[in-house]
Length: 104
Image 1 (cartoon, rainbow, N blue to C red):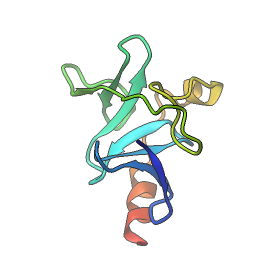
Image 2: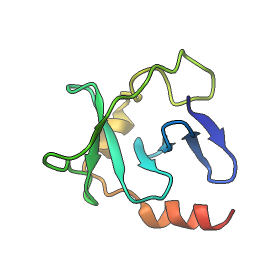
Image 3: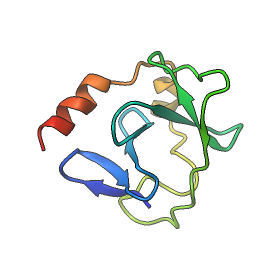
């Protein structure tokens, strides 16, 4: 399950090796190489490119249930807020994520 990681400033699921950034609603691997968004129609995390568009035939990952833990990334789905909707198509801020990772 996702827990806040003070070192990175993101939520981290060590078992899934994924970070979650609630400001952009992107999920990304711990090496910052693959980014995912939660697709409500598919019910899964979908691999996206640097422009935030789904990669054709790209990796899909299930988003396991969180059990409503406080401070986590939510239940089995990413938050469906207006901010999340507006964030679609926005480029993942890989530079910011890498900067935060480097400051550990």
